[in-house]
Image (cartoon, rainbow, N blue to C red; front, side, top):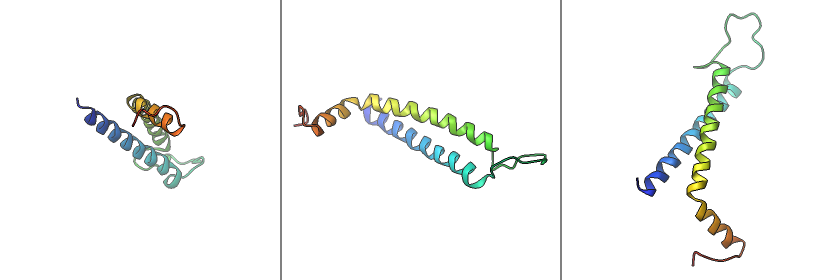
Amino acid sequence: MNKWKVNYFLDLGLFLSALGLALSGFIPWLILPAGRYGRQAFAPGFIFSRQGWVEIHRLLAIVMVGLVLVHLYLHWDWIADMTRRILGGRDKLR
């Protein structure tokens, strides 16, 4: 697979996991009520229960950390070169 295709799908995965993390974090925070539900027969939910959203959030966090590590691995040479350039060291870009 071409390098640009790998980068595209990696970035797409990072974007989708970040979007999922935001949604799975905001829904329990803004939509679902907090606290105990007393004697109700069921806990209110929005598509999933609060615990379901927490589990989705945790899973997406693990996926995103993995994708970030792959992203750093694939771009390590660029990161090292730019760090050297910014800190005034050897300039491989010229």
